[in-house]
Length: 93
Image (cartoon, rainbow, N blue to C red; front, side, top):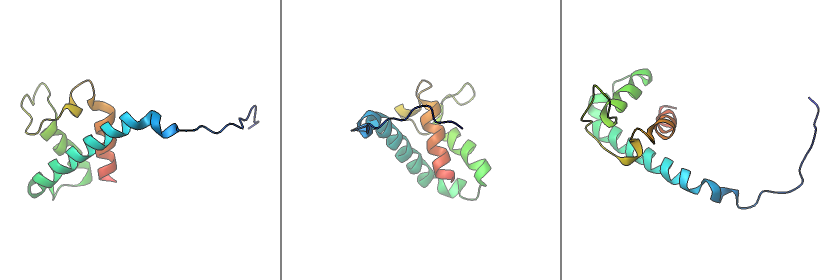
């Protein structure tokens, strides 16, 4: 691969641009950890493949799950996808 252009300028304060994203991610992760902790007796025996759908059933409002046991604004339909999936993947790893 040929290098076409390089930049000599260091990006300063790059962590600030991700501040809100990290805040939402940490809130979602904390929420999921608390749900797993509270439900561990009922889900602790599950395989990693089964754990994610089990936790999702506790926190997601869907057509078939109209009253999830745990509610948090991080997991509304508009915000759920990326934050929640990445949080669950982190926990499963």
